[in-house]
Image (cartoon, rainbow, N blue to C red):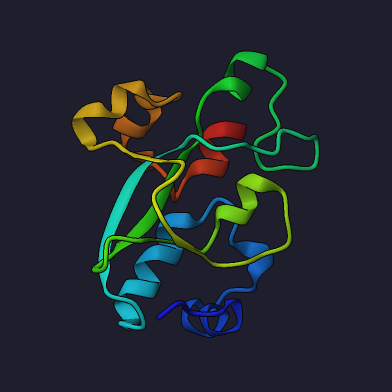
Length: 137
């Protein structure tokens, strides 16, 4: 079952405007609610990213803007991807993505050296949950 934005707002307890940079927390709340069954996955988003000054991903360093942003999502028991925050990357109106794995690449902890800001992740700042602080800090 694909949950709606409205259902997820109730489950998470957060307004959609607070979801950018909180993909990990959103995924955990969805899984804890048992509205969807699947596995929490960390990795990178390799699709088109909205690099405008208004976006979460705007940085003055062009190199960092070309990197694939860290991300978290749910792989459902039927093998699809459920991503409640994909819209943040795309710079579009909020929606819940449910479909094939098109732009998602999983990385486990041993692969985190490939992430921009990895040394800060290893220092305990977290991956997706601290995205805003890592990228703007």
